[in-house]
Image (cartoon, rainbow, N blue to C red):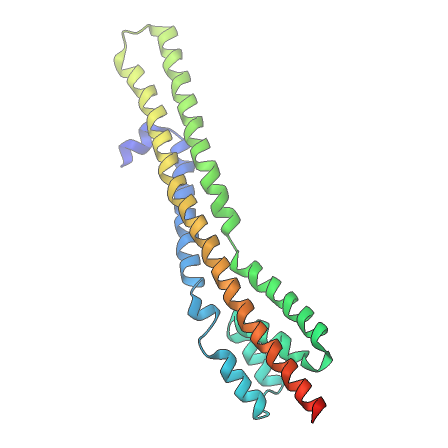
Length: 207
């Protein structure tokens, strides 16, 4: 392994650093983008029972807001439930935008690594070929070891750059898809809350 890094030149250091950073982001996002942590099962039903029982005071809303991303959105809607449907929807949308921003954290960095890693490999290819042609100009084609060193640097960096970029791109697409699925789930839960509160308010007015 050390021989490959040495043969690849200084650009291999950047490529290896990119691979470590991409791996760290993937591990962190896999842990964070857990659907049960983001949208706990039966949370909406539990919150609705607490509301019916009159237990949703300021402390309960604060705990709900800190419990999960879905809890943050539900708490925003419940805190403004008495200000009308439009105000409640606006507060939910604002809270949801912050939640989505947190869910997308580090994805731009992962996408950047996926785009830059093959370019670093290509740069290594160019540098290696420059060395090859420099050796040819200075020593001719008789020094096979010198030529092989430049060619190996060109090939190793290209392969390393692609080896980092391909998994990073795949994981970036995977995380984007997972976030889209989670956002749809959050929207469905919040729509249920808005409709339930609206129906409750309508029933109270008709009573």
